[in-house]
Every structure is written in structure tokens, then in C-alpha cells.
Amino acid sequence: MEKRRELYRGKAKTVYATDDPGLLVMHFRDDTSAFDGIKVSQLEQKGETNNRINAYIMGKLGAAGVATHFVRLLNERESLVVSLKMIPVECVVRNVCAGSMAKRYGIAEGTRLPEPIFEFFYKSDALHDPLVNDDHIRILGWANARDIAEMKALTLRVNQVLKPLFADAGIELVDYKLEFGHAISDPTGPLLLGDEFTPDGCRLWDLSTEEKLDKDRFRRDLGSVIEKYREVATRIGVPLQ
Picture 1 (tube, rainbow, N blue to C red):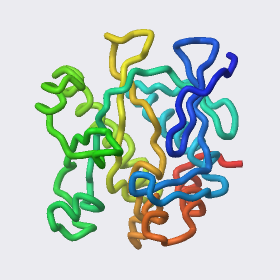
Picture 2 (cartoon, rainbow, N blue to C red):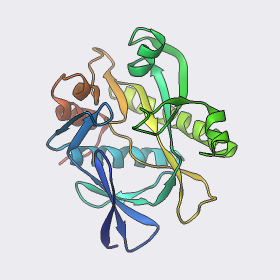
Picture 3 (cartoon, rainbow, N blue to C red):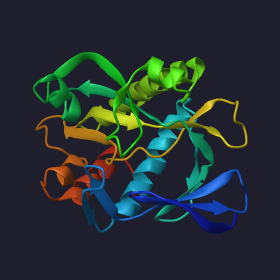
């Protein structure tokens, strides 16, 4: 496998083509951003930490029957992944009320929900990722009814796998976002989980103290961002160098 030209540079990752059109290299950088890129910084060890956390989580999900784009770790900052045509929506599951949900509905942050709440958001920095429903997605042509149902089912299946995994490490999986797509090589095939699962895209609180162990530490200027990311990794069993 030969790494070739840069295809896409996001806020925290760069994606490269390879000599196989069905595979890409995903490079995790130390860049960190919040509020649609308004707040930015470089955090040492972030790239390698998130790369290893993501590889570990994707492996656990794959073993539990959730198909993902992850193929294997390449080095401390890079992973080999299947090339996907992404659906432009984010799938969010909330186990505890926090962040935008608390603000939107005037509910106290930390309110535990009797069952998980699922939400769709249209992926658009320019529009600040607005909340959307099934009809928006289907009628505007972002995904068909089958994919919508499958995204919901897979996102909730991830909750069933990861919530106890984190709980066993004394961590509350408060909420998280996922993105899905179809393999470029099989556009009518099953959905695959894409992008990443790291503390950048979920909220993780210590079960006993409710200390934040995720990107909210950066958003809210709490400090020790990467130290807490690496604490999460150690607690759930991710091998770090």
C-alpha cells in the first residue's frame, strides 16, 4: 500500500489517497478546534492519542458486529480506512442531557435520561450543523429511508456496545456523534461507520465525580486536555506508547 496525494484536510485530520482506490490513509494531527473553527490550538500528542483510541474503539465495534471503515493502524498517527461516500448528516445519541441539548430545551446539564435520545444534524459548518428530521434527510435527498433506518439502528447498537465498555472503566458515556457512508467500491452495499470515535466527538464524564474527560475541557478552558484523553485511553485499555 502506497500513500499518495492529499485529498482532504479537515479540522483535525488529513486524508490521503493510496494506490488502491478503495482505501485511504487517515492522518490524525495535533490540531484542535471548537465552535466551528473559531477557537483553535495545537495540543501535543493529540494526534497519536486519538489515532490509538479510535483504532481500539473501532476494533471493539467491529467485533460486536458494527461494520466500520477502519482497516488497521499504520503508525502512531495514521490508520488505513475504506474510502466512503459519506452521508452528510451526524447521528447523535444522548444518554445524559449536556451541551446543546441542555441549552436548546432549558434542561439542567447532567440530567440523566430514562432512555437514549437519538438526533440527526445536517453536517454544515456554515449553518452550524442544524437539527434535522427524517423527512428533511429523505426529501432533500441526503439519504433514503433504508439508510435512515439503518443509521438509527447502528448508532443505537454502538450505544449498547460502548456504554458498558466505558462504565466498566468508571466513565459515563454522556453523548456521541457518528457519521456513516457507503464504500466507494460498493455504493449500494451496507452502511459503514466512518470518521472517528474519540474524545473529540463524544462526552465522557467520570462516573463518580462527573469530571469532564473530553473535548469540553478545550471548549471550556478547563486545561489538561490531552492528559484526560490519555487517562480515558488507559482506563479503557488502549495501548499507548
